[in-house]
Amino acid sequence: MRVPGRHFRVCATLVSAVLLNGCGGGGSDSSGGSTTAQPAATPSRPIEQTNLQIASALYDGSVRVPADFSVDSVPSGHAAVATTHVKNTDVDLALDGAAAQFELCTDDWNQALGWSETSALNSSQYSNLVATNDDERYFEFGRMKSGSPQVYVQSRIYKCTYLDRAGANLRAAAGAAGQLNARPLTSMQLRRLSEYVWQFTTYNNYGHVVLKSAGSAVEHTLHIANLIRGGVSATCDRIDVIAWSHRVDSATGALSLDVRPLFSFGARESAGVAQLCD
Image (cartoon, rainbow, N blue to C red; front, side, top):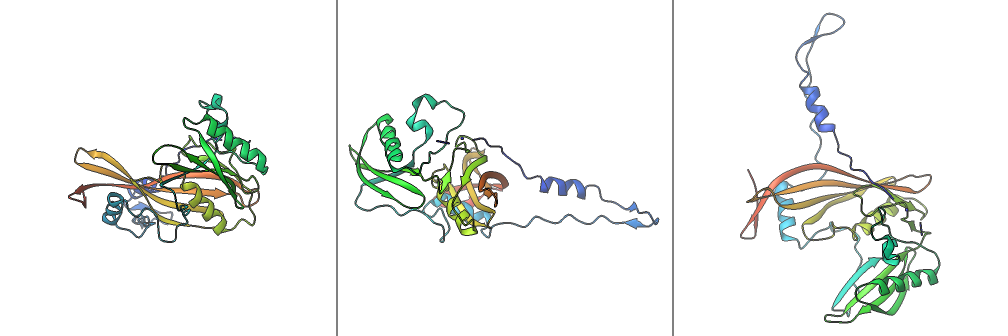
């Protein structure tokens, strides 16, 4: 087992531009001539979708990621499937109120199996072990919960050779995000990680849509739209668009997560059709 913290950073670029533009007027330069304030540049919109297209996607909810977004395929033959990564609070219930919560990692198959079993025993409903799998990123233990419908649980534990999340805190919005140990550190490696861990966040639910996934070898950003019901008024919801960015230190593999608000607007749904609020 290895542990986290996070902070929320607000981009002040637009505020600074407004202040600079407000200082205009003809001032005197050193030669005695006058200068004219230039208008501040308008920040470029980082996504292609219009506000109405964003609102329509959120209210519809059927497509929540871009076409080239990497999402795990669901195993067939099961009425319901749940996928989870075993956390420190799953194997030690005394840690449930701990400040830091993170997914465990190990390179020992037996230890991973033990953590999966302990997590199942600590769960409100035990799930029987029925399958074992793994890839370069994690160990996976397939478990079946009884009841109706029967739920197939993919209980996963990261391999430390891929990702050590002990430096992360799942309870925090941003901050340290662990250590990416996979090599080489490429833009595709970072994108794959960012899109994978997104699946285990609240953003992977109705009311959230990934508008764009793009980045480089040192930073990858998911542009996400979030629907806040009644956020503007009783008849108008608020939609917030944020930049959810993972950064990696190219020398050490240390990861950090940054969340920046980009813009907001009002919208409503009427008879299944999205409308923008005035």
